[in-house]
Image (cartoon, rainbow, N blue to C red; front, top):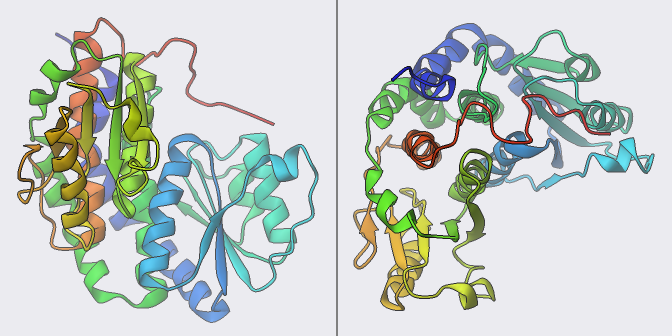
Length: 341
């Protein structure tokens, strides 16, 4: 069978990350230096869809590493409501593959006009969003033909982490990023097909994570909807017990994306507890006691560990989509570039 665009782009993720490191590292370093000089008291993010999930990952990474609070701003504040933002003393990170959605561009302009140091992460240079910001960084993912984003999502996060490492002079993170292409090449080969049986008759499922892995859970839930018409919701493992657990009946699938970080034990505890209640729980951790274990790659750094989890998931969801009779390259009612106002 001819490979889908989505499968080819998943396979290209390690190469795409290496391409970013080789071609855009200097631009990321300059943006990081500008952040160090500005010493922002806070950071805001501007994004939608998968790009917003990348922004959520960077929120946790920045808060954990730089100690600055990060907030996502709704693009409609500028494009619909015309709000004037007061962001003096802060920084803004806008993420968009195309860099041309009118509401994202409008908010990027409003953030910079409001006094923020603006940084654009985009796969398209030049673009209106890039022009609106002080620093524009090419994520260098290369052409992405499948409607569902994969390599552009990963590269957006890698670009943000590269800026963060330069900003904070975090040598451990820099080393982790340099080694990441090799780890992602291993992650591409991992087999999550054991998920297929429990999902066969499922009408819905939960994706759980915590910290940076919650951003991966959000992205995974979106991909189930985009490629397979399967209802999936993402929750923090801490939040799922505050209401959503009421829907977890016998054999309800719960997939836990667990990184090697401070939250690993607590997430496993929740997953094991849900398994004991009759759910079909899965965990990317050797420490899971009752939940079924999924294979993962250890990168030696908690942030890149979390990011690497999305790669075997992408491989699974692409094959699952085809097995369900869908074309993951052309999801129903979706298009590659969504220009909202």
